[in-house]
Image (cartoon, rainbow, N blue to C red; front, top):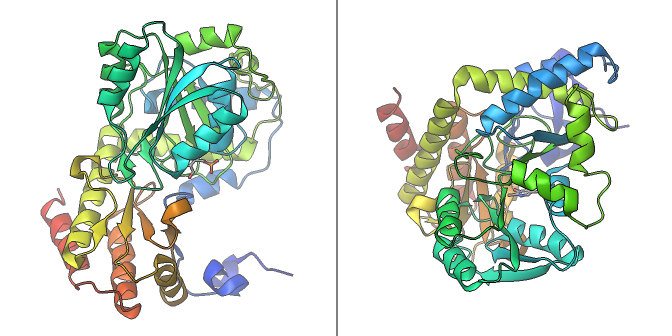
Length: 409
Ligand SMILES: Cc1ncc(COP(=O)(O)O)c(C=O)c1O
């Protein structure tokens, strides 16, 4: 029998020692999601499950929804599904589009590719723009493609804001400006799964029609909730779109949500946690949260520079403030390094995904995170690089410390 958590003696399971084994101290969960869940949020969820048809539950929903809108600077509906973010990807498609519709997508990384696979499975006609994965999406291509589409065959432009597999943040406001420059009516769908709540995204100002996101990253919750933040234009499209849509139907959700209810059983305890997380975010303030992530992103990049290892992202202004993908020197395997770090220091780092497997490891620096969490994380990486015999200088942690100290106020 695996034993899960023994609060009495502060022991807990560790993935590095196998299910049921225990190690002292706190595991460093530095994958770019799921992220560390603050104790306040864990405690908020540790409550009896409530009747989801009660007045108290309706109050909970109605406390959550406007706060979610605020996080995304949105006035349109925030819709919550009991699913991983992949469900919200699917929802963004099936509510707005019809079989054979043309969409503009970008081969900018593993997650962009996974979203494209869903679009393919629904029979959409995809104009897939090839990208250098180390550079990301070029908004000029959007403008050119849309200007050339004089018949307005393209029904949606679909961009991943923060590509978690490459550590690149695409310029969502610039992509909007490109759509406007072409005076094109296409919907604008944006994956903000690993940026939402960590890197600024402005639903209304950037005229985004659907933001797709999930609970387990910047929102500091366990996996299990996903979100669509929807514009009036997208909502109107849901009346005429002809892709099969049932579980994901926004119309059922929006109608039930008006009174604080859901068309099916919601993830009640995750919602207790969500309200707590949103209150924490409200107290810190979104500008401060973005600045905190930017500062930790920069400190991480300074550590990389001091180690002399390469950031996978080659465009400095597009380096992600939530995840840094580190390119391994030739002849060295990222998974071997990650195993050493996991075994010796009880820290989980993100693997290289898809074609990047073994060539890249990813440091997650998002969510419930502070200066010392970052320094502990970087210390684990620096020691791991040395133990794994990867050619890297020491001094990365010192460089990050210096930057953090200089910018402490
Ligand atoms: C950018 C991005 N989009 C979508 C997903 C898919 O989310 P989920 O695994 O919750 O379905 C992820 C997951 O890491 C992601 O990073």
